[in-house]
Image (cartoon, rainbow, N blue to C red; front, side, top):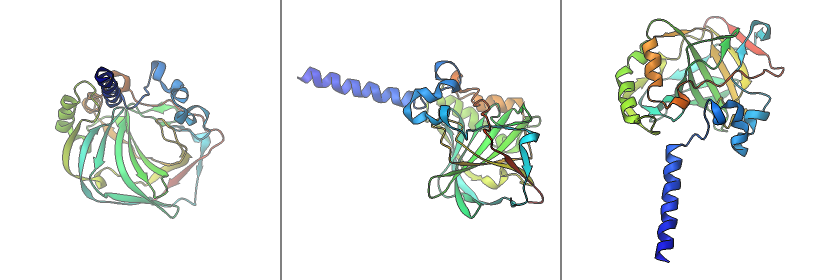
Length: 264
């Protein structure tokens, strides 16, 4: 009896350890890659069957200038933050309320930000070097994501301030250990929001499982620049399965992309 209880406890311990080591249960190539996401779990069915999936290619023929769109209304301030290994990307998590985005009469609160490399969204077929997602959520659980694309060039000033922290995170991650985090101290989100003088808007989904179709996407027209060294730093803490963590382009399925152009 005692031996049976011992093996039962051991089984639960091993299961818990496996869950901590591989919480994502998806990847970006092979049998866990994007083409397989829809079959990996019943909760991921939208990844295969959804009709409003993200990311998309922002092609000229699918873009409509809109007079209904308004300048982006964002209110951000400083907050203590941590640089976090999320398993499938590197992100910044905030300790408290850090600000909001207001669109179509709704308020979406900034929850976290994270990077993908290469970019997930594209401009006329061109994929950029990286993409930053500022993830907001309203009280009902819907999302509004502001996307910033990066081209290869001069170092990004925001990433420059956390380069030493990225090196530290890579060491703490221990070749991909999930959950490692490094304190960033006070972090001012206003430095990353961009001017928003032009942006693209469409309705889509999360770009990772479960691929829920409850996301209002805003892709800024203004590109930031990132150095090759900074790209390496963003990838260094991740395991090989997630170093290139961009979901392939999804069909528009009749959707139009709205464009705002004017003074922010």
